[in-house]
Length: 277
Length: 321
Image 1: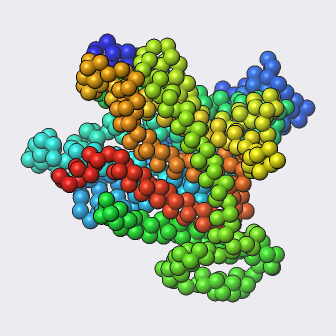
Image 2: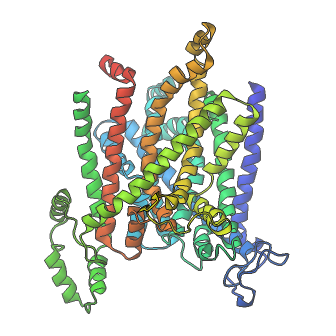
Image 3: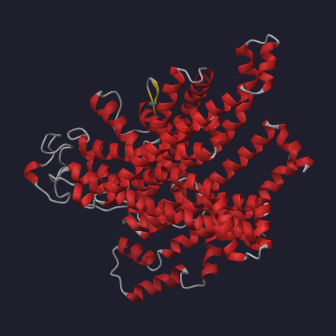
């Protein structure tokens, strides 16, 4: 057993380091780009990958490598904002619903049921559509559909710890209200929520890129993986690198965060290891 | 059973009210834009007076709740207004595009089941061997690929490089030599790849869990062939999981087709929605949102009922509780 968890810990550290590297690369994107990602140079348009341009150039002669790095900044940053907002709102709603029970609980949970009744991206598409293009609006749209999942997890976890003896003990010591929730409930329900949040990063990133691909997220000329792929689509035959480079970037990033989420789940919940892996 | 269905139907009412309310409120967010867009599309010179007059004519100056109720009444009668762009009846246009999306959804579900059930079972039987490992890695990769990237990769390989299939997917037509389904292949494959990755993993886990149960060992020790146990007992109990997964992913499919339909120019409701969003055709977007949610809610209802019919334990637990 200890050998198994050691292997899990080692895997987790590796994936965590990779994820941190991606986030750092996004943070310092400006300093990593070999060229200006927005500088057009029509004489060098649509060049195949070469030593000068490792990932080739797009139809305006912009360096693809620089644009992929810069695109990582918008994609990764907006995804992380999205997941953070959704996890916070969802957890707050879920904890309140589980803690307060009664009418408020019913009201909050019925509301989340309504949001969950919209399949997949349907509601996000409509929200993004009504708000108009722009990456902030795409983030708002995804936040609108993302929170109920966290509310449900947080609620069931809160209900589970509500009657635990350590909560009663804390109550008897005189801890009340918000302090009780922050100090005793939240730390005990954090595990599953964190796992869900990390696993959600990959999904959110793909959905955000999907909205951008449809023109409902980042707008050109902004470097963002989804809109870069949409831009390169018409040149798929002549310049496939315009689609492949940002596509592979999304794939690798999503893969890293999914692997991290999976090992994190194995680590926090070893019982599920056999069934879920 | 009848009582159960009646109870579930009653529970649907608040959800349906919520769905319609939210869909309606969402379009109100667009506010004055709504009328301005409509007028601009008709080419009328837009002044504040014209806008106000038009608003009064459409009843947009009435209180919110009153507007919602009259919209809801229209929805129930299949009257959801006319498109800003084409001027055609919104509900009729939606219904006209629905079969294409349903066809795509159905073909993806079939493809997914045909591939992922055998693959999941195979992987579980060869637990921790090379084959299992390869299946698991492939599924993980499939899970991390966004569907529009898969679509573009498939187009690149099968349509552009190999030239086997059309880039733009024409609707299946009845030709002289039967039904031409070539247009359906790539969009179906795109949707199926993501689902196969998810299903295979789950089916593998479920089969593994069942195989570890005492009854399997008992049956084996009595001399029942492994194959018989697998097909008669293990797969039967995995049916439940498959029904649950199917209901969930029909939702993902209905919503996910928007991107795939747009890429393959497949003339379903997903593409209709994306086109309507681009052209700010609000009544059309509204119809799409509200009807997709209603369809999804009823798919879930059917899956709940199926689940109960397939697993007598669920009903018994309810009686006890």
